[in-house]
Amino acid sequence: MRKPKTIQERMAQIKAAQDAGEYTRCPRCSENTMKPRLHTNALSRQYDIMICDLCGMDEAKMAFMGAPKPLAHWACLNPVRDDFKDTSAAQALTQIEEAQIPFLTQLFQYWLTQPADADWEAHRLDAYEKCPGLTTLWFEPFVARYTVAEGTLVVCFRLRDGTAQYAADLLAD
Ligand SMILES: [Zn+2]
Image (cartoon, rainbow, N blue to C red; front, side, top):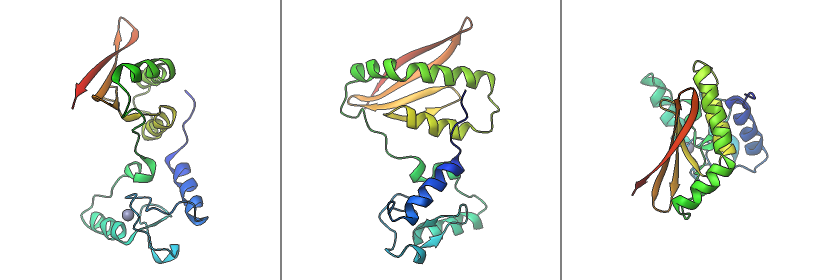
């Protein structure tokens, strides 16, 4: 399994885009809450990047309560992935089977052998990048969820007789 881009590397890219004026939303909450002059916003306590004043206050509050929001949950690392929201579950599944199941199966097999890999958050972000429309990926159990026209398409992976298998199920809205 190729080593995924680390969360720090992803954040460094966003910081560079922010410094260049190309990324103007708040990287933590993704709202249009940043003041135009970048350096007048709040400096994150968690990472060397500017965030909006509301997030700055939220971080201070969370730190006070001893519960910092994990870096991987920042909005800039989790863009809305609704590529299949107007696609039927059957069509989406065809595309997923063609383009994503081989990668996800490989990741599932890696997860079975390396559950303690410290980079699972990075692997998750890597999967989001490689699998358009993937809304959430859970590891225990290993489940990929997609928002489709009818509701949520759930693809569960499991090991049966030593072989990785998957099953798709539609949860209607
Ligand atoms: Zn914010």
